[in-house]
Length: 276
Image (cartoon, rainbow, N blue to C red; front, side):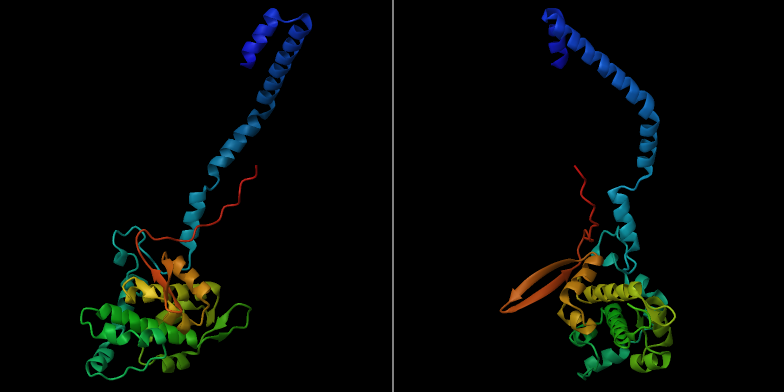
């Protein structure tokens, strides 16, 4: 429309109008030439640099890869194939976990004393099921993990924890085999010290084991009490493993439920808003 207007001005306009149109056209031509000549190299370098810049998806993938969570098969077609106990704990370690004692006590209707609210409220239900031996092993491993966590104390450096001595751990975790105790010590500490990444890793392992034991939908109250966490903290750990959180109300009580379902939902990184 502007070009057509200018054409009409050149044909029918006054001498002054014609001169103004000619001046504008010359200035525009000069400016476009200058931009092309001076900024071409700059624009080329910007294009090359932008090609190597990480996209939002690249950044999200890097964050997901770095999450302190148990090993998962995130391309699995079935939910029970996402977090596999033998891959998380280790086949040999899982095989070494004894559960016959618990099975015999449950069958004989004898009480099983454990220092865990979560384990105590589930051991009878899991142990009585002959087809749930693996889940019972996971439950006992979780029990020892909670005992290990309970034996920690303040570390020398800020934000760290000191784990219990080997002899003390053997006593507290009995009858845990040595291979299980060493597995837990090496996985969740370094040189007797738990740093933030070790603590986060232990918490997400507990969340995964709890959700496996309760068939991928767990009331988080018992685990929260065992770990001595605020509900907001525990919710964050469940979200880190891809679980979804919901609240249900029973009378005056509000229950927090974590469910693992496909597709998993991980926390998304927040990208800064673009400036206008």
